[in-house]
Every structure is written in C-alpha cells, then in structure tokens.
Image (cartoon, rainbow over all chains, first blue to last red; front, side, top):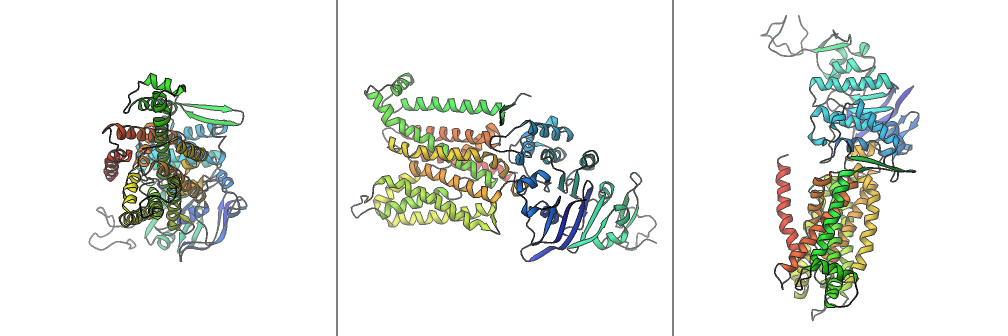
Length: 278
Length: 350
C-alpha cells in the first residue's frame, strides 16, 4: 500500500520545470529518503507532496485521496511537514510552539481539549524536550531547537511525516539523535517518514526506500542495499566513489575519491581526483 | 510548573497562561489609575477622590462638568485610539513577521492623512471656512486608511498571493509617495488647510467631545471582537507561509482579512485622534517583552499598553506648557523615533 503516489507530476517556478512528469510511489509505514545533488528539486518535490507548492500538472494522492480536492484541515491531520531551518517568532516558548501543532484539531471554542494536552505531552516526552518547555525557541541550541520543531510536528499527530533536511547545521551527535528518534517513530508507531537527507551514508543506514532524483526525474529507487552503487553515485552526483559495507550497520557506505593529506596506495604527485585507484 | 492552567467547560476549552493573565490584569489596573489621575490634572486641579465622586454623581457643579464633559471624552479617546493603533501594529507585525512593521511605516496612516488633507482642501471656500461639516472628516481619513491598505495589498499581489517582504517594500514606497502628495496639497491649498491639517497630522486630542466617543466606540469594539476570533490564526501566520499551510490554515484569505482589520483599526484611530505616530510600533513590541508572542495574550497586552502610551502623551501634551497645548503626537514621536532607531540598531547586530 502506498502512503503517497504522484501521477505525471510536473513542478516548477515560472517557466522552468524542476520535476517533470513524475510517477512516484512512496510505501506506507516505511522510511523513504530523497537523495540528489543540490538544486535537483528534491526539496521542491517534498514541498509539493505537502501541498505547499501547487503542481503545474499532475496530481498527488495521499491515502487514496487527491490532496488538491481534500480540505486542507483534513490533510493537516494526515500529513505534517517540517520545512528546512524554520524560524520561530521572537519570544515564542517551546510549549507555545508545540501547541501550534494542534491547530488543525482546534476551533475557537476548543483550544485545549484533553486530546490536545495528551498529544502535546506525548510529543514533548518522546523528543525529550520536557526541560525546555518554558525556554524561548530562539535561545535554544541547534539540536534542542530541532527537537522542539519535531515535537510540534509530532503534536500534529499524523501518520505521515515529511522532513526537509532535519539534520542540517547539527553536529554528528545531534544528527544521530534526531535520526534515531525518527527511526523509533517509524519502528514503534509505524509512521511513514519521508525526508530529504544530504548525508548518503546516514540515508543508507536509516532508509527502507531511497529515491535518487536526477535531471527532473527519478533516476532510480529502491532498497539502499541494492541501488546504492558507484555507478549511481557517479550518475546522480557526478562523484567517483567506492561503496563498501558499513562496519556497524552493514548498510552501503560510500567513500568518495578526493584530494587529501594521507593518500594510501596512490602516488601523491599524480592528480588523483575522480580517478579510479591503482 | 503551574504557569499554565487548562480551563475546560462542556465543549469549551482553553489553556490559560497565568503569568500573562496577571500582567494583563495589572496593565488594566494601571490604565484605570492613570485615567483617574489624568482626569484630575489640568488648569483646574482635582484630587483623585474628588474625580471618582465627580464621575458618579450628576450634581452639575463645576468639577462634575469638567470631569464628565471636558476631560472624560478626551481621555477615553486617548485610550481607544492608542489601543486601536497598537492592535493594528500587532497584527502587521504578525503577518509580516517583523517587529519593525507598523501602520505608519507601511503607509496606512499616510493614506488617512492624504484623504484628510484632500477633504480640507476641497471643502474649503475662499474665505477659508469649510463648506461641509467637520464631522465628515473622520470618514474621509478612514476611507483613506482602508483604500491605502487595499492598494498596498493589490500591488503586493503576485503569483496567487502576497508575501511579507513585498508587502513591506510596496508599503514603504507607497507611504513615501502618499506623503509627497500630502505635502504638495498642503502647500498649494489655502493657509487654513495647512495649519488645520498640520495639527491633525501630528495627532491631537484637543476638543474631543462625547459624540466622537459615541461614533468611535462601536467601531473599535467590533473590530476587537473580530480580531479575537482571529488571534489563533495570527499565531499560525507568524510561523510563516509553509508552516501555516501545513497546519491547515488559509494563509492568503487570513492575510487579506487581517490586513483589512489592521487598516480599519488604524483608520478608526487616525480618523478621530489624528496621526499619532509610533504607537503601533512601540506598544506591541513592549507587550511582546512582557507576555511573549502568543497572540491570545499579546493582543490584549498591546491594546492596554497602546492606551497607556497615548494617555500619558496626551496628559503631557495638555499640561506641560499650560495654557498652551501641544499635539500628543509630538510626544509619542519624541519617544517613538529613538525607540525605532534602537530597534534598527539591535536588529543590525542579529
């Protein structure tokens, strides 16, 4: 069963097309990661799946219903998106931010039902932001801030969660912390997670399904163990690399060729960039 | 953690921020005390106790007359106009997501000024007296404020919606253009127009009577009522375009309604009290410092602070150089302009 499918989806700003006639199937209850070089349209695609961008042509179907013909509040209860590096208003506290996730469930008279309280408490608990609720969002560190935003997204209580580079600007520890959290949400609660990630090796570790986007189309998609090959990296990113096995997770590990101080097995005097080793 | 208390009754439920509730209650009390003190100060000094007595009897003696007929309407107008300008600013700061936005800066107040000057120029005859009752003046300035709000909105429209940055840039540009035309009409028009318009443009509460209060009150109360229904939507608006759509908000429709509300509030205030500057900028900003940025608390706090600012400015305006009167707008601008520069300076370092 698919969480989201797109039918001949064409996206773009103005005249220029960014994604062209795309038929995509995103499996339910799995972690799907979009990869591709900068500006290939993966963020644009993610945005359009969450109706933040109107398609030029084609349609997007969420749980069997065309999102263009579904009320926006109904969609907001099924799907949540966290854009890349969002900015909180000046002086907003973490609790006030997380509360906003309940917006689609509320009206003027019902602003804080027991369900709202439960959902907010749950979101704060799983993201480990209990100690931060009275802090101002703009005073938090990068990792804390990202957890607060994820808490808001979780408070929305949706089966499908979209995230645009949730680990940008975070150090290694916090990247793993955020991705582990998303992994648990998928594993324990069977939520569909769709995200854009820059780090290929982390993408291979966490994704069930990888969608490699190149030249306005899907270049290849599937299980990272089968699709991540030096040829794919070469075609999609224009980068030469070796693919080995991640010693910890067993997932594919891409090691790019580059310049550097410690070159093993190659002659330092020869230009070695993007050249197969001896 | 007892800062928040849920309130649930049948199908109604709210989360009450206790700290903000205390702040708002204190501000209300401060406003009332200031109003009473202000009622007693003037050419005829009356003690606060006498003021309260004079408010509630109808003996018809001198104190009663001064408090009820002369000072009370003026003070009420100060509070109402201040509150309306502050709310207008709070809304704009929410939509535009920038603490430097205010009705003066995007030209709404300027639109009101232009139509007022046009009104004075068109309806004055050669002997410099008005051919139409001055009571129509508020209507003219109100139309100007709303019209300008619309012009800015439609010029900022592009690709099926408006973006905050376009709104600001177009607003600032239009404000400048409108100001130029206003100045031109003042120079070309009769002398009477120029002096009259000048006082009005600076913002003066001199000579307020009960009729004005009766006209402005339902207007502002009505707008405030609609605004409180929109407070939730403003919270979502302030998260930005993408997140408001994500949460199921009607971003463009709400932006339009909120801009209209903001223009209507500023227009109402400017129509009766003139162009009292910088209140729409300062009040919401101070309120944000006190109660944070959730609009449920921010809106009432802004309104109260706006009222207090104009009340104090008017008190100084009518007493500092007695018997001479200075427009209240002179004092709000005297604090407001440096405050604006301070804000600019602070945002420069961010």
